[in-house]
Structures are given as C-alpha cells and as structure tokens.
Length: 273
Image (cartoon, rainbow, N blue to C red; front, side, top):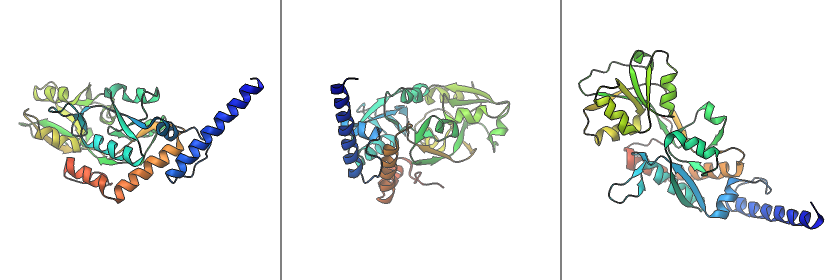
C-alpha cells in the first residue's frame, strides 16, 4: 500500500469511527467507536432488513384482502425498527432456508418465531426473548388424545414444520416417525386425511389455526417445555445487540409489546410464564 493509499485508508477508518460513535451516543450505548457493527450499517442504509416466513399465521402472513404482510411478528418488527430509527424492509423466505440466508448476509435479522437453542446460539447471536410458548399437539376431532408427553408418541406419525424446533424435539425421541412439511396447511391436511397421527406446533398458533380451519381437527395436549423466541443476527455485532435489547425493554416498559400480543393472541405471551 503506497503512502497516499495508506492516508486515505486511515481517513476512512476515522470517518467510520466517527459515524459509529455518533450513532452509539444517539442510542445511549457505550461501545467502541471503531467497531464495525450491524447497527452502523443499518443506520447508514436507513433500513432494517427483516426476514420472515410470510406463511405462518397469526405470526406473519399476507392479508388476503390487501396482499400486505401482517401478523404478530410484523407488528413487533415495525415497532422495533421505529425504536431504532429505521424503516423496516421485509423479505419473505421459506423457513427451511431462512437461517442459511441470515448466515449469507441476505438480511440483517429474522423476526419469525425463531427458537433460542444452544445449537443456534453457536452460530448466531440472539436478542432477549420476545415471545414464550409451548409445544402443543393437534389431533383429529374424533380422537381421544391421551398423550401427556412426546414419549407417548412412540410408534406414531408426527407432522412438524421443516427446520423448526418442533422437528428437533420430535426427532430427539426414539420411536417417533417424524414427517416434516414446508408449510403448516399441508401438515393439517395430512392430519385430517389420516396420513399422520398428530401434528406438533406452537400453542399460540394452534388456537388461531383451529379457529380459521374448516378441517375436522382439534387441540391436543401441551407437551414439552416452554420455548423462548428471539431475534437472531450474525455474531460480532455488540452494538446492534445492545440496541435491539434496549428497544425490546422499552417496548415492555411502555406496554406496546404487550398490546401487540393481546391483539393477536388475547394473552400476554411476551413474558415468561
């Protein structure tokens, strides 16, 4: 590198550092001014690129009348982007590829009910949890569901979403015949037609699904432990993590996060039970 190039490079670093410092001061965060951080990139761009499935009601889906994305996750994403001073930019991505897309830098975050698991935490950083839920079974209407745990499903065909935490939980139990699906409607149709014995999904979603489904299916028992849902992003972004956690905490304190949950679920699912 020649002298002129070296001087220009130092100037670019100083300019980036000044921008980072001003942005972190504006958000009340104390992080090194020289850190290359997602918060700096997003602020410079003016947008927060948010991936979601887009076919997962009531969390994120397209309104049939307007064609616009709506749902609990969409409302949370808009709220947090506003608190960060950014415009939300949504990217609809099939669930099975959504984490790979985040690794590849196709978007900044995923706000689509991503369970916080030790395996995922090895690859990504997460915000503090913003939703808590439990696995719940869905069964056919004419069946008596006597299951009390996943272990009771040994020898049964269990339908789950491809790449979901529910798929991982079912596969962890020897003897369960796990059938993975790219989308929930296909799972429920196969359940109604007897191609699988039960479906496993999020308890917050189950009530909504059954309320809006004409299929002969009903709620089954809750099985398993409480799951924590967070917002994943690429590692090495301490400023962004501090900012997103601060925005979530503000949303809890001012009640806006609770109101979104009540709107979609009728209960406050944003605090640990």
